[in-house]
Image (cartoon, rainbow, N blue to C red; front, side, top):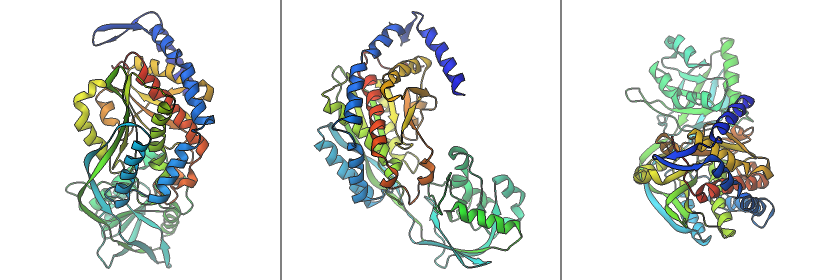
Length: 471
């Protein structure tokens, strides 16, 4: 796969290097060879950023800053006091760091609380089941729901056995294929179970590995379909009940959930900048989300991404660099509820969409980076490949596809080039949305490297004479 990608990548580079000019808005721009030379001239700056972040005085800084926040504030669920406390702390931190135009932009966000919750298997034996209610789920009656279980491994099996589902608790034991394919059971499982008359649904956690750990996340109800309580259970319990059911053993569960949804509440996206020296109205946006789920510490998802984005601006400021374009840091709020804060930011700022050169989001861990995921025109991709070549000292030069992220998709869909940090995801879904998402997962040396990549890319794109070309 990667060999094929590299071959075609070479083809489009050759076509651009043949002396043809890059065009934007019908105006002839420089040849690609000239742009390559410009990017190559940033070699010393890139090395200075890398040295400061990885080997110099700034090493481990993003890790230490993150630990201080998540150890003292904890998880930061949309609508919670913890999230608002974290926003105020970050507002003060960014000011104290000497960044410019530090401000909070008001948004309205969802407010859901899980309350007390429990599940107990009553038959064929007494067994306490670890659960985590899913975001926006309704609660059960105070006495709970006690019902027989129907175990299925797919939506197709649920449809085939629809006549058995009425009045039962549907347990999904879907195999983990990958996150994007398997997560549909978490988001849609309650709706599909309700359609066939189930009283509640319990979903096998969307995790590639488990040490008896339930993983939460958002789920979506559907208009016209009854709302039923829904929660995730561990991989181990889902597989156990599946084995029992295969032997025809009757399973009965009592489920209690105190989940409640409150009216939307006030919150903020947190913004800071290094103002551009030549084209201050033009923007390279660097971002991560400050909110998290209400379990663990939200260190990995997405404390790391938020803090390497802050670190990118800190590194550039510490080196006395000021790019031609404005570098804008945005710490999003309510990403976990579907990019709620980011959508309101887009609505407010899209009038200036022509001035956004690149939108960047880190929200897939800050383990050892392997490259950059990018979405944009072929000409922009060729430029990004040259920018990433500046990271040869770290041996991180890949530019792959699919730069989308929940908080930047609005811009990408409107034609703005977008980039996401690509790193080693082997362990990411071990801890994702679980009690295990703590600082223990994080590695300061890997965060240093991630911050260096983020800073080099954002600075060079912000300082180049021209914005990235669009389709």
